[in-house]
Amino acid sequence: MRLLLLPLLLTALVSTGLASAAPAAEAATPRLTIALTVTGPTTITQGASTSIRTTYRKHGSPVASANLTLQRRTDGRWVDVRGPVAIRKGIGTRGLTPSTSGTFRLRNHDSSAHSRTFTVTVRKPAVSATVSTTNVTAGQSATVTASYTTAGIAPARATLVLQRKSGSAWVDAGSFVAQHGAGTRTVTPTATTTYRVRNHYRSATTAPFTVTVAPPAAPEPVVPPAVPPAAPPAAGGSGGGQTWTTVSRLPDNTLTGVRSGTTLTTSSKTSLSATAQTVEGVRFTGDLVVTGNDLVLRDVVVDGELIVRGSQRVTLEHSTVGAFSISGSTRVTARRLDVRGRSGKDGVHVTSDTGRVADVLIQDSRIHSPAVTATSHYDGIQVRGADRLTLRGNSFELGPHKPQYNAAIFLQEANGGNTAVTIEDNWIDGGGYVLYLAGRHVTLTRNTFGPNGRWGLVFPASDLSSVTFEGNTWGTGAAATL
Image (cartoon, rainbow, N blue to C red; front, side, top):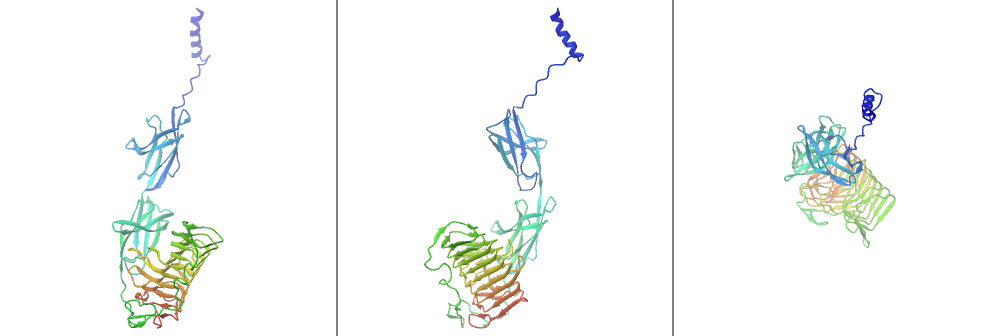
């Protein structure tokens, strides 16, 4: 009887609060768990990407190998997104590039486990462009001005890309920066060209626009003889009734380039960043980018383009290159270079695009044999911003005119302009016009000009207000005047 009463007594005690019930069993640990972290931005421009990182565990331990599926919320339901998230040792990563804003999550193979949700906001970009003129004369430039926004907001900084039409394809023709939604780029087409501007992510482009190039009107005769020879005569020979001579200072293959008897070792290096070093007797089989300081390159061959970028105190002597460029560098000296042509490149290109170029001397060098393509343009030297540039005793040999030839010497108003440019004792021949001049304190003295300029000595729109032109002659010996 007592045993029968005991359960009833315990029930009564619990109901009156005089005794407590047994503790409930702890909730079981979930069998499978998916934890997710968004490692990239949650607000992106259309065409850009973000990324996620996930951990996948079974009973608290990493799953050795599995595939998870990304899902997107669409019309009130979850829809799988193609491309698995591969799990290795419990960890997986994935990038995603949604074209519109959306909410996402991860699931496992049988949907028995899901991650938390996350939202990516996609801002739609817009880019537009205007051009300062759609009609230019050969050698003239036009300025493209672009405006760029994302979701109607101008970003502090964005990279835009100018493209040109080549057949049915669009080809990148150079990038530029838009600051607070606005940026400019100068174009100098050699033939009528169609352009457009795109954003970095290729998710927005402008409408195409065309810059039409017309040959310049025949200028008034500016040089004696009034009618120059129709074809270039051989050095020291005669043609068109005039005798053309090659001045004694004209460099040739015995004076420039690698010296006879030099033994060359071959290198496939494409960059040189060392400091306080002399490099001699090396042939570089491609392009070479020099970024070091206090360097001397002597008796070297660069089969491609030699680029000196962001450097100080670099000396080049007795070397042979396909093309030669200086970008954002100071105190660069080049003597007795043989610049023998590189497909689609200027002979020499000087630009302050990555920093100010200053204190450059190019002396006793030969720039010849332009290697133009159907769509390229060629200058013996193009200068886009420089201070204290000297060209002395060189030979610029473009030869008989081709449509791609722009100028033997082109001083362009770009990247802050050109100041204190000295051009003396050079042989200068060829181009649409031989000279395009823009700058402050530009001096040309004792230069000799050859017969191959197509339309005249100097581009008519050149600013000559700060140009000194003295003691210059034609190859016939007649005085040359601007």
